[in-house]
Length: 399
Image (tube, rainbow, N blue to C red; front, side):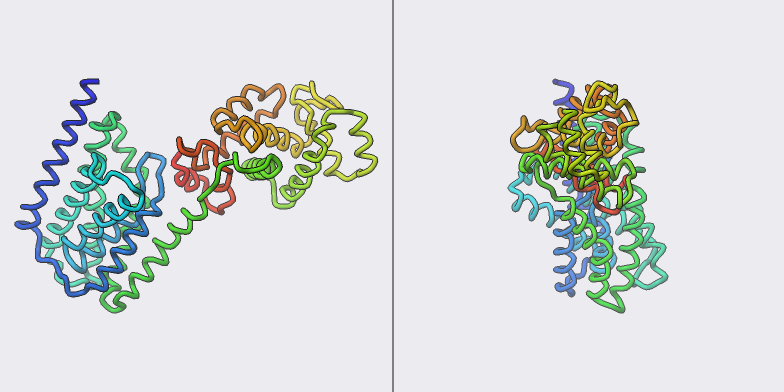
């Protein structure tokens, strides 16, 4: 415990000293800032606040948003102090709206990181003699953005993660590399936008917002979810079965068929596994969906009913609904309302006996791409519906 406290105090001391040193650095090293375009600065601040509220969680534990690229645009056009405002105002606004403690360890690290990334990029542009923001300045702006990216990582997470979080230093290279592709893309977009502000004015920021901020906000809005515990069992079963089908590669036609199987199976739950009831139902409705709904109670090891089908002989839709229905019973309204982690443990315990192991594995994949947290341990599956690469969905889930 004392070692952890010592690390925390060392982290606070380093970041405190780094933040305090920003004042003389800005006075002695930074060129004069420009305040003659208040409208442009206001738009940049608004975009920065929006980006902060819609930051994308990355699998390495960091969060990515358009804040740093907006700071690069501001630095190139207006100078270091406005750029620092674009970095810091979202912290204050976000803290006030979310009712968070603003003066805390993480924010101290952010202030130090934002300040020194600004100083480093400012000194680079000044040394390169970049006076105007024309096409010839593009390579220097790209380099300045890259410098901001690395200085931010070294001064912020590079100190905070090993000293405050207690993670080994060896995780830092991977931590930076994981977010590098997205960072370079945003840096390039920011550099081009800074050049376009000359001929286009604030309209260039509208282009940046359409490309970077709006899609990011749309993704975060699309990923908003509600607890499965608020869903009735049938709705939860439908959502689970469709999510499982997506991960198992069923096409659109098969997923529509699965929805019908889910509905029929749910309506017949009281008769599940009863051979006589199954015979009666299939005589009344001899459709394929009816037949497959009647085999939802089959077990993977052949111990279920009504026909004692074993393994993959049972239709895949029946196997999917079997897992989805049990998952729903464990997490939806009216049940014990377990977390996804607890429900997956129960499903795993029955894999290979009652459930198809491949379907249970698909359930793990579904949860890995959802926004599971301590505050919401069992969100409804939704991110799988976004036509995005699985890696990005996992990044959005923060898993």
